[in-house]
Length: 376
Ligand SMILES: Cc1cc2nc3c(=O)[nH]c(=O)nc-3n(C[C@H](O)[C@H](O)[C@H](O)COP(=O)(O)OP(=O)(O)OC[C@H]3O[C@@H](n4cnc5c(N)ncnc54)[C@H](O)[C@@H]3O)c2cc1C
Image (cartoon, rainbow, N blue to C red; front, side, top):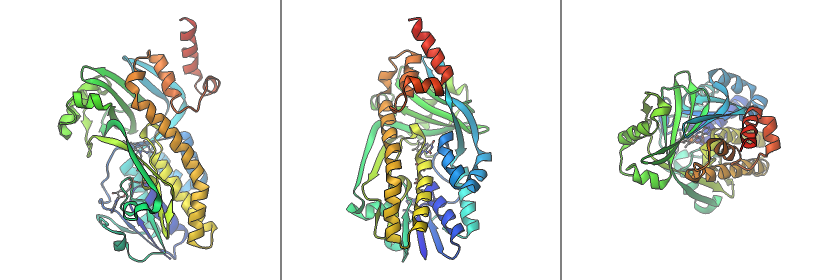
């Protein structure tokens, strides 16, 4: 069997490494436009629960990745200069490049043929294959080339974001909200290596224009963001890595495969970074695809099974991600709330928790919240 994978992000690398390790007799080729040592973005974060699936299904990869991760408990929400700790959830983070390099090493040692610095311009360039895995991200060439085959819908959020890094290590995943003379800003920031943190800056379109960010270049934007978040950064600089302003894209596909071509990861669906699950979903898709291919006798049945088994799980997570994103789309309104109330609104944004559950999962936060409420 000859399998071709387009895209050397987490989804494509993980699928090819896993498949080739379990089926060494098959030929697996992966094409990636970037060099092996380069990527966009900085660190990515996973909740403890998000990593459970990897510990269960693939302890070997979990054991490889876990020691390289930064871990902590709690989320901190900073509003009007006050820091509110929200306890209850543990997190782990790792540099995107470090994760990719671990997966590259696994793919290489399993015998996957890795073609870096190879931009594929059409499906035909991939040659004959029994299975083509489209792991080529948000702007998937394969998805676009096959037109209506997948029933794709795309749209984008209104807020603008830019993904920076910084040398300041933060103790927890922190959501900092700033009301500045230029407008209202939010940063999602957390450490992913001993001396490095991700720092994603987000603002509403009105602020973006008013602050002149629509006309500012990469360097100028970075300096403006450093000024806005001077208190959080405490003298540290922001670092740019192709950190241009973008609108978060929603991608969804009604049909997950067409003939021998199957979509995984961001090419198939996106999940907003505020719930930090896109990488996890891409890796889980790869696992689900592998299981379906092994369970069925032919590829066509395996692709039907992949969509049938995986779709309900993805739909649930994407729905939560959409609710979370819509909370961020109106974060300037939530900033009218007092810090504790805003923290409560933040926790409830994906609509999945009530007070009872919170008393179990976030007892310290709820004790503080209840105490404040009883005095007002
Ligand atoms: C600001 C931001 C923060 C995020 N934070 C998190 C987080 O904390 N946790 C988390 O889990 N997820 C996070 N994500 C989401 C995560 O980055 C994606 O969901 C994940 O990378 C999807 O993996 P993938 O393999 O499907 O696609 P990608 O990682 O996008 O990989 C696709 C690859 O295909 C290659 N490619 C595309 N077209 C071609 C072509 N024609 N020829 C050759 N190569 C091609 C690209 O170069 C790329 O390497 C974040 C996303 C954003 C935007």
